Amino acid sequence: LDSHGAVDQYAEGVRSGRPNRIVRVAGMMSALPEEFAAEARDIGMSVVTTSLHDDYFMFIKLNYKMPESPTNRDQVALAELELRKRQHRAIGLFRALVPGCEHAFIARSSPSLCIRRGRVIACDYDITREDVLEGRHFRDDIFTYGFHDNAPRLQIRDGGTYGIPYRALCPLGIENLLVAGMLITSNHDAHMSTRNTVACMGQGQAAGHAAALCADRRTTIRGLDSTVLREELIAAGVFLEPRIG
Image 1 (tube, rainbow, N blue to C red):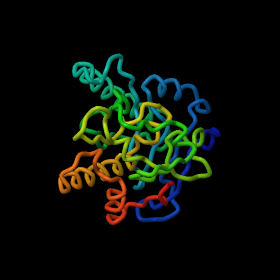
Image 2: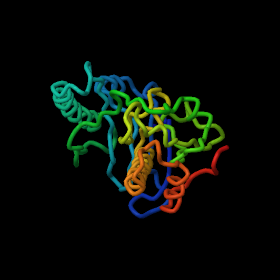
Image 3: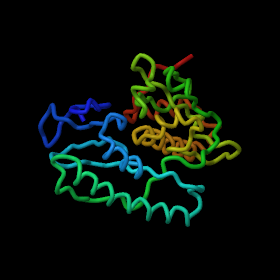
Image 4: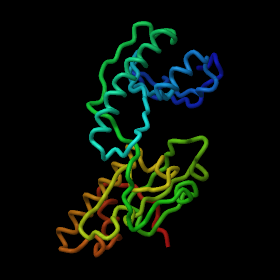
């Protein structure tokens, strides 16, 4: 990537027990040789990988846009087959055109495809693009987060954080259900932050604590005082910015 001036992301950390090693790198497709870029685009391959071990790529992302809703099980099955075919094309591309990868092979793959975005759940509060990029916090924050998948194009102001409010976990019109995960935000730019693993983990932890508190106090999700929930989360080691307002 460096030889083509195509480095887009670069991070160092501990790899195979040694510090100051490359652990994440991403490239700009437009700067790569067309022979590689054309095939990569055709199979939806992102030029990004993470590695915590020598001679091992933790993942190679292959993206596929389904022609119909992922709620259609037949379409999901067809997408699964297509992505498996693309895996073999991707490894062939590495063997043919990436120096050092002549004998690359697939060590493992996920048991099923991951749906990045599908139907969105409408909640009492819909986290907006501006909430994320402006680094906004709320009185009922249940999690503090500071990563955006589209950085450096989109970044949180001043390298700060934003809050995910408890209201964003409460689905509209349903009283005793909490939701968490990739599909709580309708705006795509906001979704590209809230969908990430750590954000989903934080939402899930908050939802679990909230459910336990509701059961213990015999109240509904909207009857639960968010201050009590925040105190429980802080006691469990969750970091929250100072209360707003």
